[in-house]
Amino acid sequence: MNMVGVTQETIKEAAALIRKGGLVAFPTETVYGLGADALNPLAVVRIFEVKNRPRFDPLIVHLADFSSTEKLCSSVDERARKLMEKFWPGPLTLVLPKTEVVPDIVTAGLPTVAIRMPAHPVALRLIEEAGTPIAAPSANPFGYLSPTTAEHVREQLGERVDLILDGGKCPIGVESTVIELTGKEPLLLRPGGLSIEEIKKVIGKVKISTISPRPRSPGQLTHHYSPRTPIRILKGKEFELITHAGAAPSNHENGDENGESIFYLKTKKRVGLLSFKSPKKNLPYEVVEILSPRGDLREAAANLFSCLHKLDRAGLDIILAEPVPEVGLGRAIMDRLCKAAGRDCSHRLKTGASTD
Image (cartoon, rainbow, N blue to C red; front, side, top):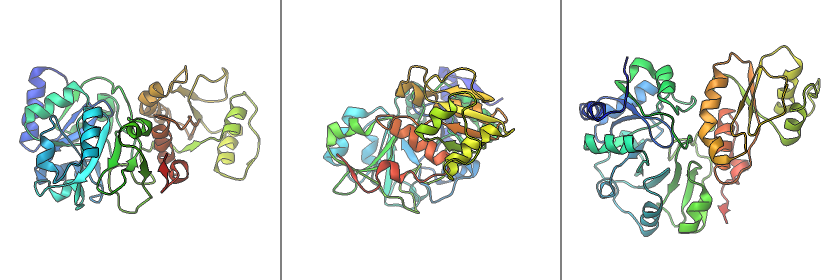
């Protein structure tokens, strides 16, 4: 068994593996990461192999101290310094010009590097003990649901990881927010565990990234964070219909994919529901998972991937998901749901428009 609890001895063991070019799965405040020495190209190659991750998708480098930015980044402007001072350690990744020290495989050949300082004691102790920055995407097969517990990592990657540090459930539960600071305007590349509203308070207007065939940071592909079970996002009226037992229409009401989703309730298919808040009882579902009984977006984000993992293990034919309010962490939740469903999220984030 390669999954161990967190002690001083197991952190030292994990750090030694990192230094030798091994792979260690470890907890952060966002999701579990699959870590390797960021300055060892051969070690980083193993991340791509184990995850079956395309080489054009760059990785995030995790740091334990501010001085590491000088080694990895050729320039750090005032905007970056303000954000680091305010939100590090925390769920914020910054994309900055890189130095020659950073291997091209880490950055997918881009002239920039994505860096962050995690706000989790295990992650920070591991990086400090290893004595090197750690490159770490989520510890899961590429494109699949992110892991928020060590058990999720064990189920998905098993013995392909040299060691899994079990530090309990990740408290935030969605990946970091990614901001690029290489141009005149700050650019949001991925919504995440830090709300765009909080970032704007520090650096002002932030532009939303356009969809690009070549990612500039993780999480930019249209189809990502997906369960093996098909998932559909419901519209508001449709959700109200199906939260009343037996009220689902018997045909494709709107002729679109959401009408098709409701149609499943009148078939013999096994249908699960991902509900934002506590729905009415006695609903026509095989399984119902609730993100936050009280409708709290922070709690919903923390439970998102765990709920999706449970639904995906339930042997369902389809998962229907209730949308959440797109404010604060709600933006990150809807980004993950859209990509899990293989839908373009740009219409939700107002692609190319600044957040004023």
